[in-house]
Length: 240
Ligand SMILES: Nc1ncnc2c1ncn2[C@@H]1O[C@H](COP(=O)(O)OP(=O)(O)OP(=O)(O)O)[C@@H](O)[C@H]1O
Ligand SMILES: [Mg+2]
Image 1 (cartoon, rainbow, N blue to C red):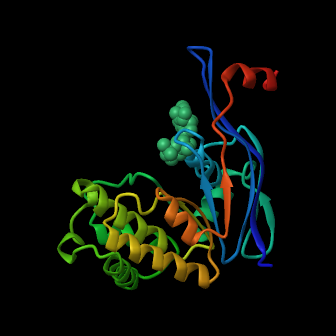
Image 2 (image 1 turned 60 degrees about the vertical axis):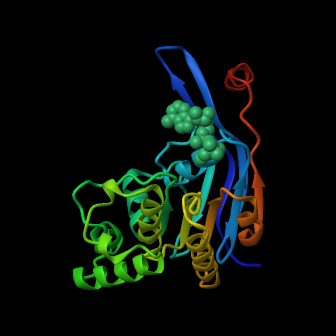
């Protein structure tokens, strides 16, 4: 068996709307493992909390409950639900990548620089970083005339290609993918599936959500089904 890199136990996320005294359940009692060189897929209906699981692992959201045990490149285990901000930022820089469902990009920055940024953060020289960024943009089929302009005005599919190139360029150990092929044309989606297979063969651990069940069937080594969140009343009882 391949080594476990990530083990999630009893993960939950809810949001408290204080003004309205409301509790919005998001993810609830989620558990699974992710292994090196394998892809674990999250499935479930819209609103089941799939994206919220990825955001909790990346710590865009602070989990409400559970443990997110991550084994780093040096073999140390830490709980991402409790790790300090500095540790999280270091892991994002060196080991954990996230291709989000929607690209939030910096205006007025050339696409090539947006994609090169993770390499620059690792200390790669600018020219080399831009060269590798260009390779990934070419692999994603993004027309070269777009490389020097900002992705702010790009179409959904173009943005998704930039997002993917940026997520892949630094070869993270653990890659979180939120519907990475949803806005792509079939030919580019097929390319991306091939690239994901390549990363898997090289040992990258991946946790992914796919728009098409067919893609899940092709790429997933494990499938985790998320149930829709329980009614708010039931949650209140649990918390009490
Ligand atoms: N920041 C937030 N504030 C309040 N509620 C939130 C927040 N983020 C997510 N939620 C709620 O949590 C629930 C789960 O959202 P999430 O985006 O994880 O669903 P999903 O399974 O990824 O759905 P989809 O398939 O549509 O992408 C939704 O009901 C959503 O409204
Ligand atoms: Mg989602």
